[in-house]
Length: 77
Image 1 (tube, rainbow, N blue to C red):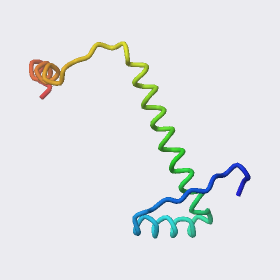
Image 2 (image 1 turned 60 degrees about the horizontal axis):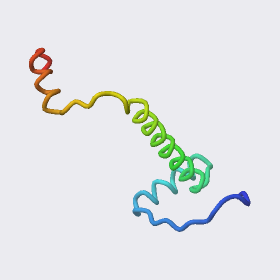
Image 3 (image 1 turned 120 degrees about the vertical axis):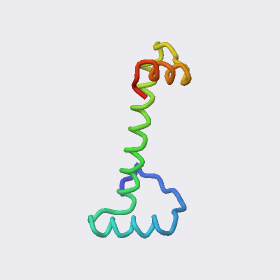
């Protein structure tokens, strides 16, 4: 462990804990490594989503009902 790591207590569903423990053993990685990687991936995905929202912020809004009407009008649904 690095001096830069922080200790945290988390509570996992028993089946998730078992799966995590087994995956750690099978991959020769620690449970902490696996959890850190999963959290990093989740946060990166959130960052991508936020960037996409920012990129599309200037686009006009379309009401769902209007979109459905347009799709029906053009025979797409």
